[in-house]
Length: 154
Length: 159
Image 1 (cartoon, rainbow over the protein chains, first blue to last red):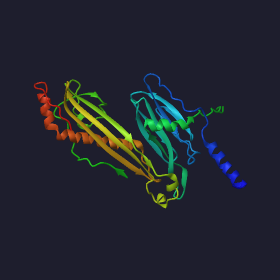
Image 2 (image 1 turned 60 degrees about the horizontal axis):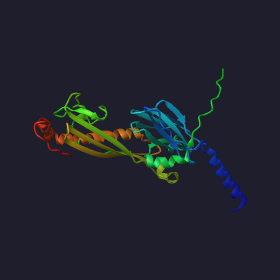
Image 3 (image 1 turned 90 degrees about the horizontal axis):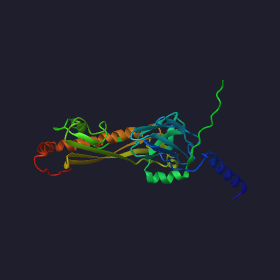
Image 4 (image 1 turned 90 degrees about the vertical axis):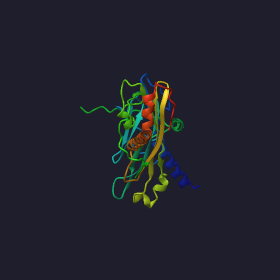
């Protein structure tokens, strides 16, 4: 392999790693009494990695980067609506929190914003995933850290 | 495009008896059951519903280079299977036991989207309608079983 190709591939690898969320590894949470847990995770994918659509479950809203996950604590025995939306599309899923632990996988698909341009800010999806599959997939994700608060201008 | 099961469309009506819901959400039951609820009936309804998702996405490295993607070919599908079971009992005697399963899917392209909620709602509606149809086809026997329950030992019948 010539040197130029090696440098190029190293650059690509560093760029891709740089897009992933950094944080502590996955840790299971025990919900407080009368509460349930919804884990929303986003396995790393290069496609759409620059996008962080808003995910809302109950009253909590976060943006999850590629390779990250977030734990939503919601009231138990209710129907909780989780939504995700980008500039051009949205998805919505209803979770019955009688099941105390639920998993949703965030994915970004192709979306068309203009007549001729497929943009990577395509269609976000929240897919309900069975516990067995999700528990394996979420192990590769890290906890999404809260965005740093910027002081408000007076 | 929605792919829904074909269910015979008969107008929902109340059952010829009333029942008490012991399991299930009164807002989330088949229409015939919802119309036949009572808080002080000896007859009980037990309703359970479960959804299983089976979504599908075309691999992005295929759709990205497929010209059909640009003209609106589906790039994935949201699919859900709804299972429902309804038990009608009088004390320890099961008067009727009904189960139904329906699969609903909706494909999406880069121009159109399918939300999980709309597909879930369609699957729930379809499975409830199917339970209703089973109830209506067994209505006469059920009415007789409810009327004679308590007078003589009833035979458990299911579908």
